[in-house]
Length: 319
Figure (cartoon, rainbow, N blue to C red):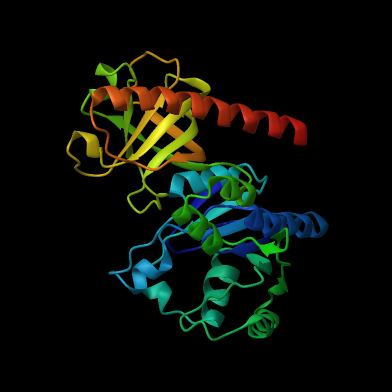
């Protein structure tokens, strides 16, 4: 996949079949849409292009809006690269672009600049300044300006349509297995290891304190999770216990994300890590003393190992 950051002008892209959207999560519904896009591109012998945005469009329209994102921009590009598309165009979304109506956007950006000849629209997608236009309007504009417009089909699992808004609700509820089912992978937190309080190391369970690379990342409820951790210095995924919370036993404070990589004793400071949350184990709580906390941490390690082993056995069975 070739990535192009667009902020105006002719891109010199080849004629293409494209789709457009924010694609937060690049979940199985998105992948279903992209699969239809690629099928159309192969049939028409044109390039396949996913067009997305560098920021959530609503942030430009409403600066007070604080998005709750399922993934960072870099995570989005990484996941899109796994789909097999030819190009990803990252639009620099501006106030001027936000003021374009759908027809102007299709003519000036999609046709003239990006050379889109066929547009595959998500079954519930809307674009343009006032969002009042619907699919029939897009078809009419396309006929006027030489873009063939078609609608994708929705994608459901067990009768439930997969969507970013649904997955956000699942994240807020801490339903990690359901998120994995809808996304096709575990929910990921990414960031750099920064200095922490070192209490975990003193207790025999050293933790990596992770500063997220996406400040608007939606976090699941505070608590303890079974996870896989990978990244610099770790190589392949390693089992881990992850605590999201405010360390109430040590007097509380700001929210932290701390990962204890089971069986690992190296130094991860300043390393970039990927944390794939697989299962919620328990809520965060205050312990009477350090001994009680240490005993619980040992139980958390056993619970995480059991949950991750069960997950691996299930995956192998399904394959």
